[in-house]
Image 1: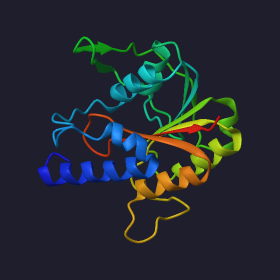
Image 2 (image 1 turned 135 degrees about the horizontal axis):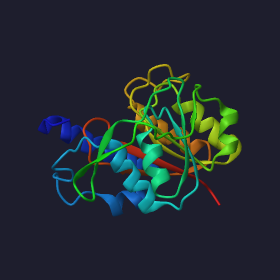
Image 3 (image 1 turned 90 degrees about the horizontal axis):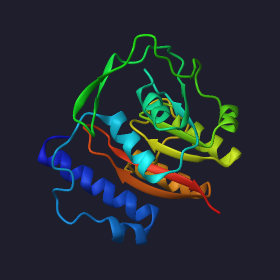
Image 4 (image 1 turned 90 degrees about the vertical axis):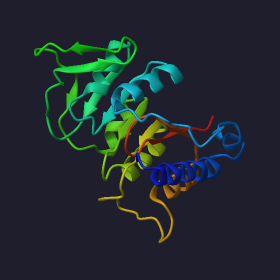
Length: 209
């Protein structure tokens, strides 16, 4: 996404998704210039953690497809009750960069976070308030269905459409289609972007009051 063409395409996609989710929101979030994200960072878990703790109140979080568990670790350090749901058990990373201090922070080898070493199943949503999934291949439709069934909120950063049970029609971008699908399921959708390389468009889907 570092090339000007790719940045332009990403900006266009984000504008389309925001317009689809809420024309009013699109007017408020339209970038003032093409340089909306001039420096792409690679610290995606730290950036998502910042977004969550800035925007939402602490709650029970399912970190679906959370891998090594850095997001869960950061959320728990901030007072959230977070749990990784991932079929592949992995240790926490040995270190990470604290974006506030710009310093490396080491994680003790004995440190652990709560994990469910299984693939996500819809019934798991009942034990959480918020379902979070960053680039969780094949889980997005399942997460939407589970959140709708148990009236939970969602934060998705969808990547590719691999292994999803429903495919968008030809010519329609997967994320744009997913916004429409969330709206059909009765959610209010707020798109957002994080400043990291790769697919950095997120969807905050809330239950309507």
